[in-house]
Length: 268
Image 1 (cartoon, rainbow, N blue to C red):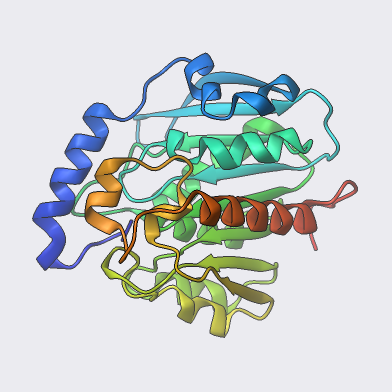
Image 2: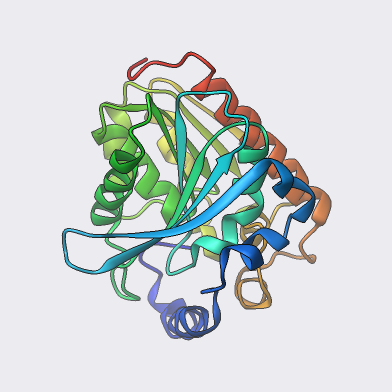
């Protein structure tokens, strides 16, 4: 969620973060895969870890297609103080289409400081381990901001996909002005947890950007799966819709496939 929440929401979001970190997701790969079991016959799932330059450990999950159709890969990041398992559905769907995906849980964010630049550097470090020919950086909310920064800094990036991007201190706007790679975004309805769509400003300044609004979508609709904790804080006027989540996953898959391609190159 928002990389640096407004003070009115700080106490609530700290409680969300603490509960999320305590209860969200250190399950084994079989449990991770179970959420979308029908797709896993084509995907192998493996847990790993690397060390951030700050010394903390970055937990990763690799979704490897059995029939890989691209030389590139996707690095996929969760939102502010959220866990990588909240993007399992999208990761499995992408890998089921032959696109390798690695998710990660950031270890440097704090309730008072999202540290998006540090998170971006950690995403790049994960990408380096893959030895992929071209990387799409993707992320939800504040993870989308980290993906944007990583895509701006990493010469191996072929594009960026954001899910309800939240900017912080106009850092995303500054990065986007000189971005020489495609930027594709999906956006929900304005609400407190997406900072009332402050991320849309990024798409007005990036030279190669396009944004797709998802009508009626709350911030939590961009997680797959989400949980009651996110929905209790961030849900919109109605409950999360499975149909909207399927729409978001399908749109994100199309965006990634357009960027990565079967014969992508390190630069575009």
